[in-house]
Amino acid sequence: MMDHDTLRHLADTWGLVFLFLTFVVAVAVLFRPGASKHYKKCAEMPLKDDREPGK
Image (tube, rainbow, N blue to C red):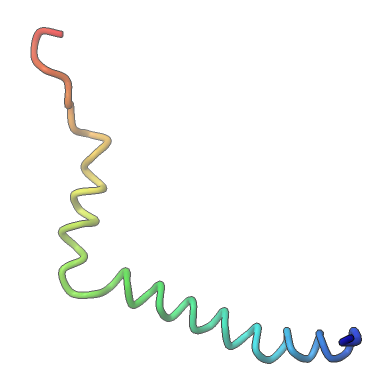
């Protein structure tokens, strides 16, 4: 069984690497080419009126 110091060392090193890589991937997905059309469409969704006229 792992002791507290081993688990803390593991979290301090590989946990930081994992969180940094997750951040880099999230930023890369947000700023990929062609993503701006998708995000503009999502930003305009609350302003659209999807109801049919007369209802």
